[in-house]
Length: 456
Image 1 (tube, helix red, strand yellow):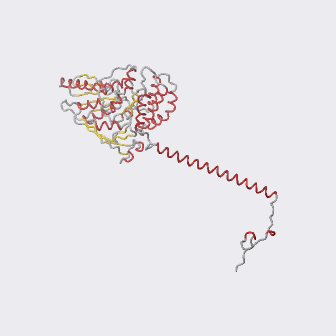
Image 2 (spheres, helix red, strand yellow; image 1 turned 120 degrees about the horizontal axis):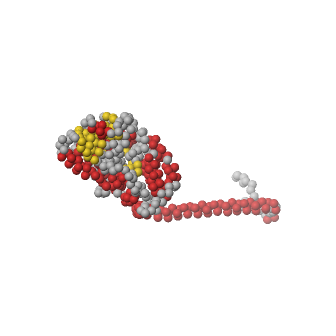
Image 3 (cartoon, helix red, strand yellow; image 1 turned 45 degrees about the vertical axis):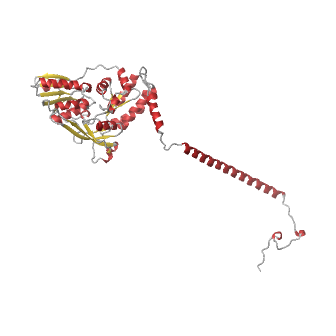
């Protein structure tokens, strides 16, 4: 049998221990103190652990409870519910954008309009190799202009500051419209409520603002018809869309009553009109054949979407599929623009049928250094549809920025507090082989009309 291990006799149930053999040793005072000290330390450790455990349980319970409550009361998505979006939009229209009639703009309103101007142009402006530096200057000047706004004391000071700010773009298609330009547009579009463009021009805040403006005194520009022997002179130094029907009627009457006419001289000097309606309605009377043009429109932002949509639905002259092709995937490389700067492109077609009832005559067109925008497009269409002779009265023969062909018309937006209407060059549409208008002849004289008439 295996020997049992030597253990304390008091714990061996097989060995009986006599009482007299049992001795009890008492602990010394020092050992008792050490035991008490260890006991207190253990109690502190247990107490600390219980506190930490209780705090952790509280956080867990509180977190779970808060999660459950938020889950029950939360919306289905992280966006505002539809009714809240509607309330916010209505508040913006009815409260924050108040009428400025009979009062000056507040500093907050001035800063808000400046921000709108900056954000809209910086996100939609058609940046090209030729204007990139000017665009960068515009962007960099925002913070400085913001500080200058705080120093303006009158609305007119503020308006002048905004005009100087947009002038940094050095682009005649992007500017704040003066009273005369706005009134010319309103005169035509006030009878049209179908398109987005017409609604922007008729914005109540814009109508109110320009109505109160004092018009600067400039010579009235309108189409004038003058007979000189066998030549009819059409002085079109400004396109006034509101007068188009009256001018067409007068032109037709002159042609019918003067059968000996054989040539037409069109004067487009100083014409920098922004609207394309006038010349596109007048061209069929002058064209020898139908005018057709197809081009790609590249654009950076969203502001052009409404006008492309209007073209697709309302405009009979323009045709577009409005597909939104990604600009970065365009099949060709363009030297004038960086495709990565643009979001989309679409194909746009312009078709204008000539009026066969009108006698066809030789067309001569005179322009100068100030002729730009839609005047350039009109001259281009006359060249292609009537083989018109294009003459420029200038001391320079090299193409300038004003000679740049922009097939697609400008868009407009309104500064909601001040009511100022702003035009923006927000698309690139020039063709690879035809960026600038090509002239047949250059002259340099103080009286270009007489110089040309002497040779006709």
